[in-house]
Length: 130
Image 1: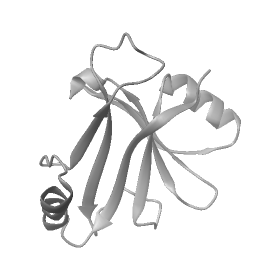
Image 2: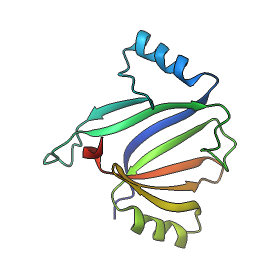
Image 3: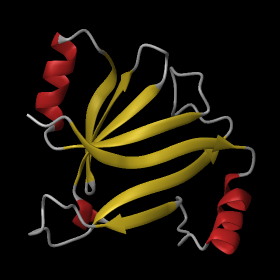
């Protein structure tokens, strides 16, 4: 079973997320959306894919509790192929799972903690959901 297949996103806290995101749009050419930015690319090992894969970039308000229980100002999102099965394996390996698996039009999500207190978001994407 494959575990992580790529980086799904980079999320971080900012004092003024809208202003900071606009700065990245103006000066670095990011294609800014209300929630952040989506970078599209093709998966090398899935040439039959109908839609490009995506990697998200998003600034969150400094006071967000979305990264809890981590106290870090960032969170990485990693793409996975079979989230439910991976969670079973991680649980057996003693990895701390945070909350319950959630499903949306654009994929399934779950969260774990690494040994240094970094919250990690795991995403089984539906790239055509964007």
